[in-house]
Length: 143
Length: 143
DNA sequence: ACTAATAAGACCTTATTTGTCATATTATTA
DNA sequence: TAATAATATGACAAATAAGGTCTTATTAGT
Image (cartoon, rainbow over all chains, first blue to last red; front, side):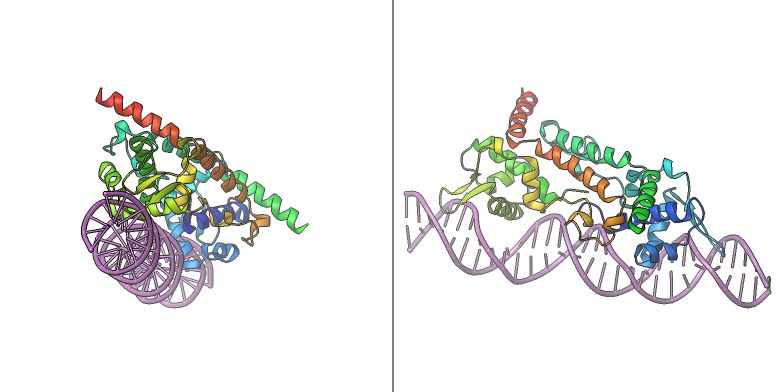
C-alpha cells in the first residue's frame, strides 16, 4: 500500500470540510462521525493539516476548522504530502548525490520519471474538483 | 518511501545477474558482494524472485540463479510486484466494491489513474534496457 | 562421502502506523 | 468570573511491517 490510512482520512476530511461546511467552519468531531474516521486520530491529522497551512483552526466555543484558502488552490498532492512528507519512490531520490552508485546507476532516471508521473496526476486534482464531484455523486445517488 | 528497500535490492540484483552473468548462472553471494546488499537478506529476495518465475534457482555445486526468461521479457513492474505484491495506491483499490463509500466517492477514479500512470512507467522499462544502460554507464564511467 | 550451492522457516530487532488518554489552552457566552 | 465548547500537545500503547539473522534442510556435482 502506497498511501497510509492517515493520508486517506486527510483527503476525505478535506473534501468533507469543503463540501459540507462550504467555506465555513466545520467541527472535527462531526467530520469524524460523517466520514467514519476514528475521532481522536482525526484531530491529529487536522493538526498536521493546520500546521501545513491547509486548514485554519480556531479554539474555543464556536471554534472549529476551515479551509485556509479556496478549494481551487488546494490539490491532492499537497494534502498527501502534508500528512506523509515528500512522496519518494526510492531512497536514491531523497537528494541528488546521496547514493554512491548514482553515476553508474541505470534506474535512477526511471524512478524519477515514475514518481513525476504519479505526482503530476495528484497535482492536477484540485480539492474544488473533488468537492464538486462529491456533490454530483451524492445527489445522483440519493435522487 | 513508496518502494521497500527489498524491492530496490531486487532490481539491482536482477540487473547484476542480467549484466554480469549475461544469461548464465550467477551466485547469490557474489551478487550480494558486488551490489553491496546484505547477503542473507538477498537470498530471501532471490527466493521470492524464483517463486515469482523471474529467476531459476539451481542447488548444489555449480548451482546458482539465472534469469528464467530473456531480459527483454522482464520489466520493472514485474520485479517490484514480485517482491512487494500488487502496488496499490489506496485500500479502496484492492478490489472493486470493497469500500462501502465507493458509489459516492469522488477520489476513487483519481487514485486509479495515478496508480495506472505509475505502473505504466514501470512496465515500459525492461530489464534488457536497464542492463544495456548499465553497461553503457559503466564503460563511460571507467573510460 | 564431501562440498557448494539454494530452500525454508523460525526468530529477532527496530521503526512506523494507528490509535488512545489525559491535560492544557483558547475563546465565547452568560 | 465561571462554565462551556472547541482545538493543542505530549505521553503512551498496540498492531503491523521492514530489515535482517540463524539454523537446518535439501539438492547436485565431484
